[in-house]
Length: 163
Image (cartoon, rainbow, N blue to C red; front, side, top):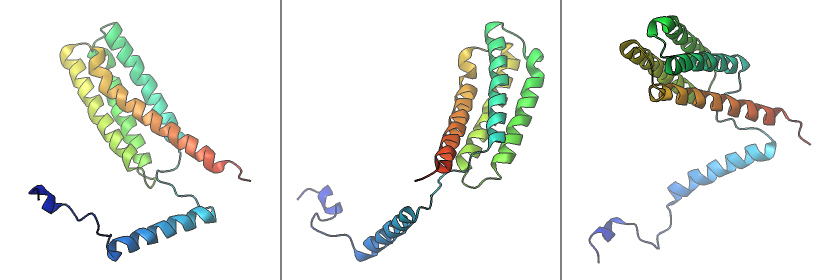
């Protein structure tokens, strides 16, 4: 017999009843919800105000990134943007915290806050930005926009009349 094979469970053993019972109970609960027509939501509901705030922040951020990368504009020209962006992110985060099951969005906003702060520091030290230095912020904004679109789609599906 191979030395490592003794650590594997025997192939002819069945799961214990202590393992099967919770799985059967979970399956029964999920089936009951499905058959009763109840919906199970795994993310928070769509919030139009949050969606608009994320879109506005993305538009302002893209304008600054474009000016800083294409025109080599200085940090001083955009210093107020970085302060406003931190405030906008905090406001979106505050609103997102009001909804249950919104941990992923709140975590992404926290990472966006840090990435925006870092982009501002790079802009201040280097004097201008290169596209790669802004990619982290862009990626997080895309993620938030995608998250909002998914929430919007799921809310439309849930509101659709069912026959």
